[in-house]
Length: 401
Image 1 (cartoon, helix red, strand yellow):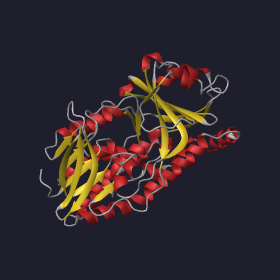
Image 2 (image 1 turned 120 degrees about the horizontal axis):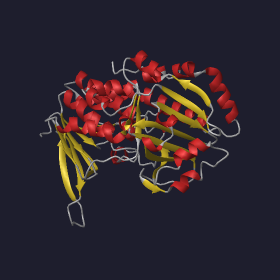
Image 3 (image 1 turned 45 degrees about the horizontal axis):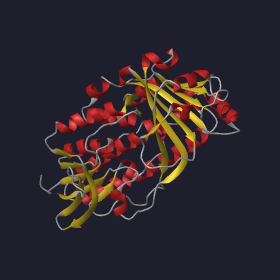
Image 4 (image 1 turned 135 degrees about the vertical axis):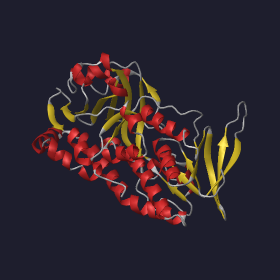
């Protein structure tokens, strides 16, 4: 591939792969540089609300995703200590109202669908085992320097990739963001998340229903829903905690999780589900303050590299998918000035992503109420599921145009 109208993407996560497909459809050649030697995702589910699913459908992924996704009928909010249902939010109505499905899906299934489409596209080249280290802007565009780990080599080889644009989709610890000038570390949010998958046949009947279940306790909550076409149940437990480390795949033992969901404060039914997995993966939640500018010249950021969002609204992957669609739209709208297209993309995205970041942070404070958890539950019950759900219409009704 030549540098002419070539986008180099750092990172082959959900955002990077979606951006590659979107930019290729906009007429660009695309090179994806991914530091992992092979792409594999384990132990995590994703809620694909209509703002994200409509982008994926537009990319032609309907049949691939429908085969493995689950369409939950409702989000059920439960009281931690006894499992009493506080309210039920009708997610099926969201899909009807927004004109796109509300799906829950295993991250690996979503990544596999995106990867299959990427590999089938002759205008996209995926390079694994190469970590973006630095970049240099030149008269012809941009030179991206990657580090490639050769077998049995003590020092990684350096490989240069030429392009006209660089998209930093390399996550919350983004090297591209650091070279753009923000060398600050992400801030620990004083919360830790544990995740695991449970075979559906091992779970109690209520957990097998096609619903998103949200258990609210004091300074902790629990989410679970079926994935993999209903064959597995994705479980995510989030508590206030002091453990802080980068990454999101540290192994953890069941006793560590159960200790944070003690009997008395948590229903036996919740603890029974938490006790099924043989092992868990945990990650410390981090966040960053919104940036006033995402890029410079032919470089910009996408997804968590630009706007990491806490998981309390299930919008992390969705925002990255939205970013990809808007980026491609602005590149299409500025065919003779790609840099101008990047600035237009950033201008369109900053306000919305900042608002979602702030809303997710506020939702986290509500979920993890301490002494006034009773007040939280009462207010939610009075509002009711439909009225509470309408408060998120501004998120779910988003469209690229």
